[in-house]
Image (cartoon, rainbow, N blue to C red; front, side, top):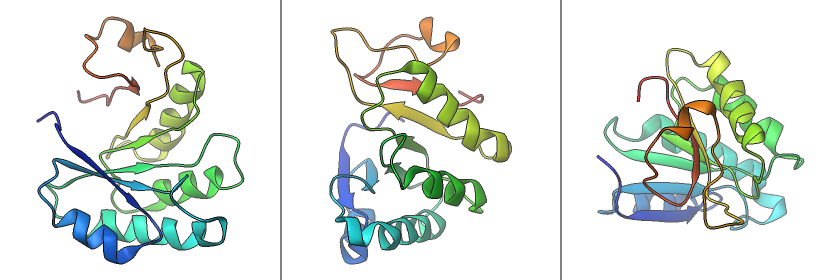
Length: 153
């Protein structure tokens, strides 16, 4: 199912994450970036991983990571790689370069081959989405975002 409604929730607010997961939204995006104060980044990541692990298997949960090159991104990718379960995908803010999006998806996927992950950038600087990988050149655009497809898609 393609989600029609996406509910963003700040990752440092566990109470709001619980409410979002109980909502009727098609997908929940736990934000680790702009919605989270600097002093709450670690708590937000811990809350997000806990939510992914405890959410029902049919619940669509994405994470919005911090920008590539930020001081938090390496910890976020490491946590995703170490988790027993990954989210449906990750949103990569401020990712202009399709190679960066593809590399981030590949980094997580390389350690999660049994549980593939989709990496997307919602950022567009022009009318056309930036293709994230050669496979996405032939994909029919479905939303204004750049995605690295799951190998199983």
